[in-house]
Length: 180
Image 1: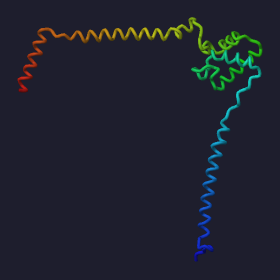
Image 2 (image 1 turned 180 degrees about the vertical axis):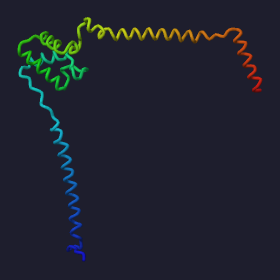
Image 3 (image 1 turned 45 degrees about the horizontal axis):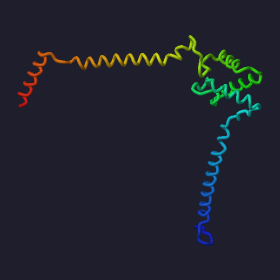
Image 4 (image 1 turned 180 degrees about the horizontal axis):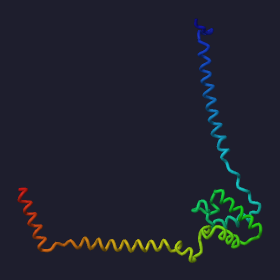
């Protein structure tokens, strides 16, 4: 026995369509909530606002000449690494303690070595760093010149002697006679 409504429609089927619409709308709402709310969980602590703009300018100017020890190919001023934030905080504290830029750099070099400097000084421990690329370039140029000279000799040397030429011509004539 089937039960139909006043218009001859099955009321269970009419509600099924509404349920589908409800689930589709709720899925969309859930998806939007995830898209907009999840990234806030990944957000980091905001960078501290400079209490003294002069110290902040001085810190940025100094940290542009220092290397981030985590990123290694980025200045301390541009790095977003947590360690870089700690070093910038340390630099600010030393600036508030009225230390000069040279004293701060000396402190960082004593602690982390010359690697922290983007332009390390020329001294016995950094000679290879400064002149190594030029040494490798010179070695590569010498190897290239030697290779090209040997190659030129190999190309020029295979000139046949008269006897070798006669033997080659005889072999070629024999080959032509067999093919004809």
